[in-house]
Amino acid sequence: MSQMRQTSGLTTSTSHYTSSRTTNSASIKALQLEYSKLQKEPVEGFTVKLDDDSNLYKWHVGIFGPPDTLYEGGYFKADMEFPPTYPFAPPKVRFLTKMWHPNIYENGEVCISILHPPTEDPQSGEHPSERWNPTQNVRTILMSIISLLNEPNCSSPANVDASVMYRKYKEHKDNEYETIIRRQVNESKLVAEQEGVSIPKTLDDYVAPSRIGATGNKNNKKSIFSSLSHENDDDLGIDDDDDQMADMAADDDDGYYNESD
View 1 (cartoon, helix red, strand yellow):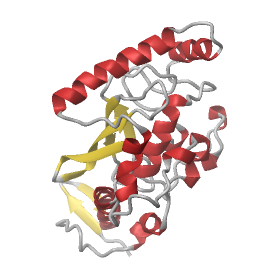
View 2 (cartoon, rainbow, N blue to C red):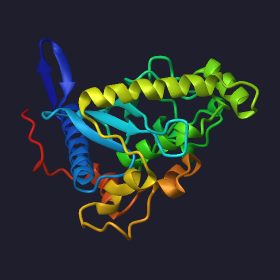
View 3 (cartoon, rainbow, N blue to C red):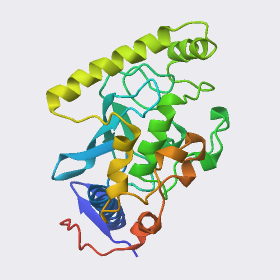
């Protein structure tokens, strides 16, 4: 039974504080697990680092343009901000690099089903199964975004002008879309050079991190990129370790994180 607490004339329930502590503890455990795994077992196509070592809720991301696409050779910076209720609510992803894309708003925020809360929204045209669920993770999000770069969803665009231009490009009516993307790729290369970032130039370079992983296996690990499609987000990179995150809220052990009353 929850207790009532009187503070400055306001009566509040201690159950609110208990719930908040449990939620924060669960999200921190999930993020610690994911971040540690990505450092030990890098995945092709992107890098992650913390904005601040004391803040697990904001990550800096570097996304490399996939080979054999307009984005090949590009280096695109983004921020991921996680809510205290993660992994039961999705993070927000916003590109810091200027992006001209049907599914990226002008402020850089990414619009993709996997980042939408798991609620019923008949107006969106999205099936609930396409939206966020606790089995998704940073890896599935970023691999979906990498796929989305070259395969935009123009049925519900965040940038209507980019969507129209992309359609004309695909119909071989206009090359302005390609011109803009190649210019942005070239600009991103200059940023990578300034920051000392090595951009993968071949498919072998692109998939090398995931081949090596934590086991040093350079030859037998199949590339996720080779079979990636953003239409099958539920199948991306989920394994036994990732499934632990769906159970985090049930664990009240504060071994990773201690919050004072």
